[in-house]
Length: 249
Image (tube, rainbow, N blue to C red; front, side, top):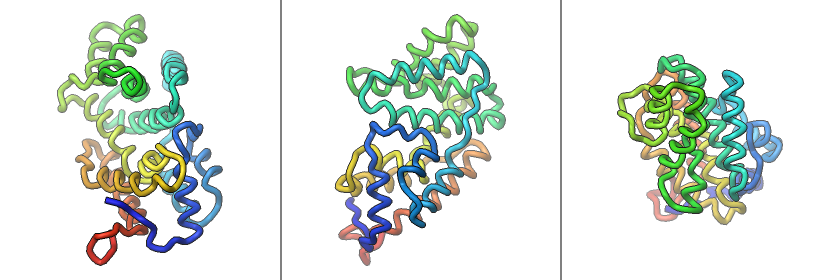
């Protein structure tokens, strides 16, 4: 599937050019994206939606701040780390928002967000399972702070070895999947490469993510998913896919 603009307006092309930022750009907040995208009406609409989706991240305690600093430092030696770090920040903020409904302590939700993908760039560069790498890294950092039961709980969730009915599993599942659609999901996909020549493939991935989007488990994640779905559909409707019926997506 390949997308092209319905109307090659300067505004739409400017937005696409801004979104295809590349993985090295330090776009760690909606404000960072606002500076990059500018003040065209289309860009402002996109940023307004992103601000609704990119939930605030409040560090629960000093140990969590230490783990946040560690996670960033662990990723920084790898090429493309800013793209993954931005995803980590968004997932962690969403996990914190879901924690009360899941009955999970904020610190535990925060640490799941911080470590859920910390092994991703290891996997890309050296092989292995990023889930297991992340669990091993988390265990090494957490074992002196929490008892064995809590460490096992958190690392099994990170390694994807826990029950799908576990509220911890459901929390990080929802927080992670929500970053695949909506303004944040679109920006995440498009910014994996720089230059609008890569936009068609990225938009196809966005459509796949929307089509395959799973059910959410909590009222807040369900509400966020509804808004993100609607925005994604609206955004994709600005494009045509050659060969599609009537030329419209």
